[in-house]
Image (cartoon, rainbow, N blue to C red; front, side, top):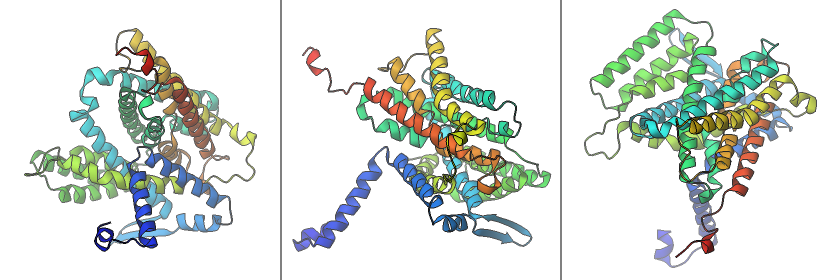
Length: 418
């Protein structure tokens, strides 16, 4: 743009380049941009798997990647590096957000956090109960009970952002806080229920790394490099221990100092969160979605969707979240334990509860832990079908309900007194 001012002319090529750059900047400013990218990544994966590109898609995700230091080696296909490595960074960001919220954010105010916590319990318990009811007689299928309990915060907030000022800000805070609590629940569920055979040696190394992180935090170490170096050791140890490696990301985040360096406006935790957020929502999550949402549609009919596993997931996501969140929220407000978000109606709260059925990335992640993926799946049907259907129903249903029951701030102006 500066060169155009100096020359006083603008070539067609410069105009196109400027328009593309402006479009990208405007797109990234949208609150819904991360959710849109997730949808695009999922569509690309579906196209790849259901076209002649499928051999290239499978070959890409099967590329062997190995890191070796002397006798210590980590050798996995690219898909597992995405799910175990990149998603550890995602959980690291979640850990940073949770710590900040507990110290100075929404989770630091008991009066504002009571309703989202109670709602989150309903949003985790009801979907799991619906899934368990449908799959009770199948012990293999029961491994997926936690899949519909997860909420994809980026996707849900993206849909809510499409409604703009029609939805009061208090409801956006309600959804954000509920999603943070939901993420905490998912972390606990993964740690307890999706842990394989444990290696005592690796757990010992992991515990030593945690102690080192604790000591650095207590002694006031503010440099980020030492935390990341010890954190890398912790991640490798947890990966080898049998506990899922993504939990290492949360542990590292808990010890990142919430203190400012001299002359800095942000704390170290806030600075890392600020720098990492774009890479996660615009890079890691779309890559994860592309790698995990490729569902072959050949031979899929209503019988596939009505198989107990995908049916339980879809019903849990779509029905379980809205019913669990709304019923416990209504009960808490009626008992005087909590208050309805300022400016919000019961119908709007129900619509937000429906949006919490958008599981997508978090549900896909738990699904990969419960059943494996693709040819490695332990069930005869693709569970990802239930995730996609439940997420789609929740996104469309929540948006339509909120769109037609929430008035724009400009509506009703003639009814107000000057």
